[in-house]
Length: 113
Image (tube, rainbow, N blue to C red; front, side, top):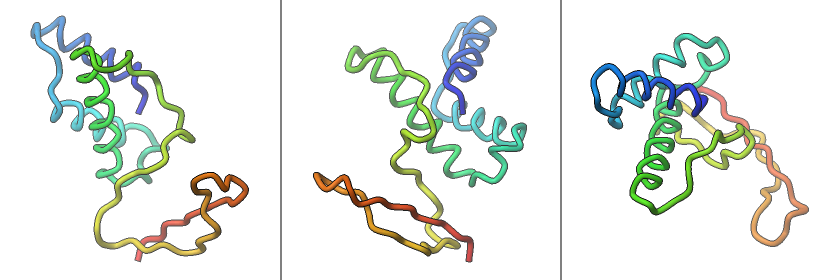
């Protein structure tokens, strides 16, 4: 989900109703964007909601003065995503890039059971 589109949607919400979007509205926006964009349709809804949650928390920390302005995060910068607890398994696991040993690489493949 693009942060710029999300902030644009929030700006429209503020101009109409004189209030900002809450966490649930961000999540619903992420789900709506997922339905509209063919690239995101393969993404599980819980993952889309997690991206919205991360953006909401970053935005909240910014307005509380605890962090810098949220930026658009490139897909390769996401180190973790939350998937549902059931219906998934890990397969074809290679060496994991971890700690100081950066020579080891990892590629995890998720497959639906």
